[in-house]
Image (cartoon, rainbow, N blue to C red):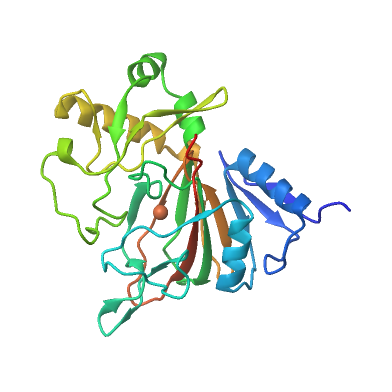
Length: 283
Ligand SMILES: [Fe+2]
């Protein structure tokens, strides 16, 4: 039987909307294969109008691999104790205590949890409550960003390795159990190559700019090169902007895509639930 889904690429450097599916159903294997192929090609997929439970989100996510538990957050305990694989991204509080991560401020460009040796290869985010304005999410294609570098920079970064900060979340909040460092050479977190190979394609792998450091360079030279790479990687022609509607499910390739978030009105509410798909330890 033909798969019911339709793939509609965005008019952008990455991303596509997938229509024709109800993610609360268990999908046929051939449908999952088609989604995976579209994901590999477009890097970010959007499914609109999904009325799914947390169990549905976890079940759908598991079709694409094992799941990682959320990163340590500033509270030091899970936001969703009943669902250990779901991270809650929200500005809501109860008695002054955050009920989710990242608050209402801007989240800078980053990939998720790259301070781990084996960061998640993808994430799936379900928008439950969405503010009337603000809080848009942006994605940037790091294949395209690498391809557009000039030959000198490609040669310069070919064998360079950078530290990916594990002490702060993407809103700049210190995670529980970490201390501030004043010297980026002491930043805690995994070291990853600046260029990751995917078959015969290459992608920039930057993680997040704050507290990053390129090994075997002076701090000044590392900062200058990182600033240049980041400025080039986050140009408009490599990105797509997503305005959320309640019921949106977005899945992104975490190792070849950067994302960031706009701030939004603190008086409005935003609640999102996210899963993280484990990376391949052999990759
Ligand atoms: Fe993120």
